[in-house]
Amino acid sequence: MPKVKDPSLAEKGRLKIEWAKAHMPVLGIISERFSKEKPLEGIRVAACLHVTKETAVLVLTLKEGGAEVCLSASNPLSTQDDVAAALAEEGIDVYAWRGMSEDEYFWAIEKALSCKPHITMDDGGDITVMAHERGFADDVIGGTEETTTGVLRIESLARDGVLKYPVIAVNNAETKWNFDNVYGTGQSTIDGILRATNVMIAGKYFVVAGYGHVGRGIAMRARGMGAKVIVTEVDPIKALMAAMDGYLVMPMREAAKIGDIFVTATGNKDVIKAEHMSLMKDGAILANAGHFDVEVSVKDLELMALSKREMRDNVKEYLLPNGRRIYLLAEGRLVNLVAAEGHPSEVMDMSFSNQALAVEYLIKEGRGLNPEVHPVPRSIDEEVARLKLASMGIEIDTLTEEQERYLKSWRG
Image (cartoon, rainbow, N blue to C red):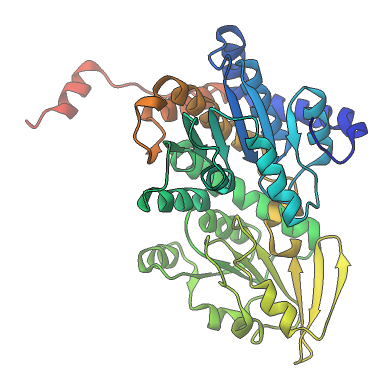
């Protein structure tokens, strides 16, 4: 039996799902084909994803293909309760509600795994890790992983010889990380900060920790709103890219002295900690765009603070011994999903189309793949891009036979 916060919210959730579906044309095309061909008939999928309206469209697409889906949340605060209620009413075994405790969060993942899945679908690595730790991995054909953080964790499982089944790194598809990570996170992170605080971004020093795809997207959008953007990095090549893109680049200990808004996007822990917080201006705002709530050291902030109070929804004020106040957004969790609605449906259309097609690919080819992290097949990546362009009314050129021969030849 599914477990959600309030089943009476289902009608509101259905409307949200309908709105998302209208803005996800590529997944709609895949859903129509799945409905006719039933390529997932008899397959059980255990998914650990953010339970949003876009995720609902993906889950219902898998159901159209014949799959039985058990869904748990990949973040205790990102679940849209009305969407969860609507999915439960659609016959999806969903175990998710906003405000889960840590114990409830992991209980829900284990409940999803109890369906004895053929496929795991992950966002952060938690369901993949638990499948291996608690004996659910033996009969799994393969899995998918949505995020940079999760791919790193699963690659670590593979390096240690622990991984028992192949996992497709959906995160690394070009139609995922060049769009979802850059444009999706860039827009939705700014959206989360604005919904939580309603502060002016123009004219402020906006510090972005990390200049991977996510950091680049956030920096781009902050600059577009008039912020003076500072990038902090540990990778010299990415730091050089940020400098060439026109941003100020400096260590966090220097950025901490002048920044007004700080956003972490690194996938690592303790990116902002006590030594940085003690240098910050009165009124500095801290937010996290990485998957886990470890990038901003909330523990350090709690230990340092003389007092704390909830100023607004998703805004907590900490009073430091030096008399300055620091504002932490969304408890240090993903600000775009806790304080806002996550990525726009249009960009999740590509990411979740990759997910659906990767599941279909694993059913066909998974038993012949080694237990390691695999890329999304290029044919899937290009098909998603082709369908997206078509949905936008965009046509592109094609190579002539002569051009193809030229590119394949070593002769001039």
